Image 1: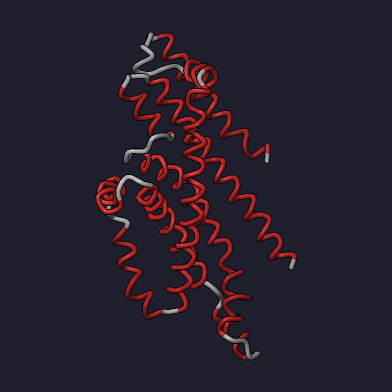
Image 2: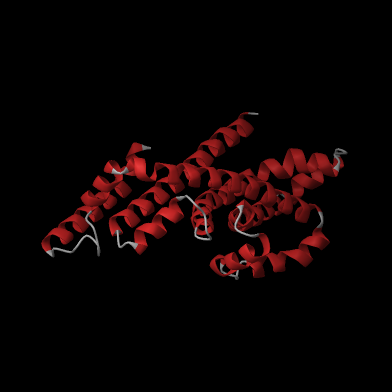
Length: 248
């Protein structure tokens, strides 16, 4: 694991070094482009001022991601078990993704107000599509020969789904989950722009309006950290569950 990660870490270190060196050589003002050391210093010194924003975003992200996973998996299973419904609904699902979420957000506020509902809906809309599509594709790629064999042994449709199709689709499902895990943080930040009282999105908006570019980069830094955090959790679950499936 360490041998595989040294290359991207080295590239990131070189980029940060060039960034730091450029800001010093060209004397770029901090309000235009702060140096990495300035950003880290701001992040460390002002943790009490924005820690509650981060925890608020984490709570919103977890709730929205869980709901998005439930919706995505439910839609995928229904469309897989009902082929006629899948043929009718699947193109609509694809078309729905052509509508930018930033355009849809104001409509959700008009329809549902400034409470928690529109924020969760944004995260769900961002998360459910990768999960649903990956799950549908994974379920459909099950070997027809194995399905035929199970039918010959007298297995029911429910048994075929539970013991063959679903385990076979696990790698595809986790691929969708990893994408949604990173998208969920983005969805949470966008939803906080709708008028939340706290959150990384609120902190970023306040920092931008006051030309505190260093604080904007602090917000970006923690967004990246949260994305990696949720991605790592899904990766750990994937290794544990698929390993268990193989051992079983």
